[in-house]
Image (cartoon, rainbow, N blue to C red; front, side, top):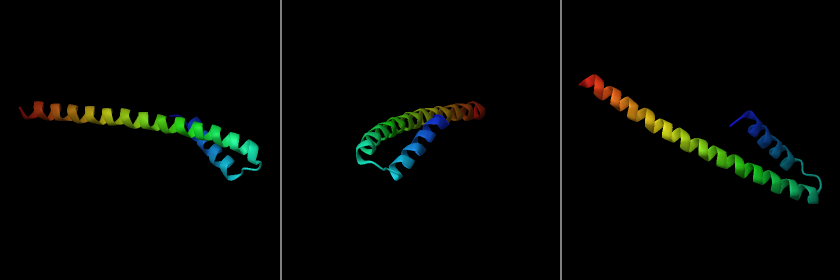
Length: 70
């Protein structure tokens, strides 16, 4: 996940804080909520990948310790 996505979130928050016209802000709010939803999915995917990596590292550590103890 790049800094560009975080910049989008920052922009979303600024827009939500400074809404001026109701009609255009509703459309922007929907678009920004969509962007936030996509970002949330990206974060969830990243968390899952990190969890798999963590499990793999633990298995590797256990294997190395078993080799060293035999």
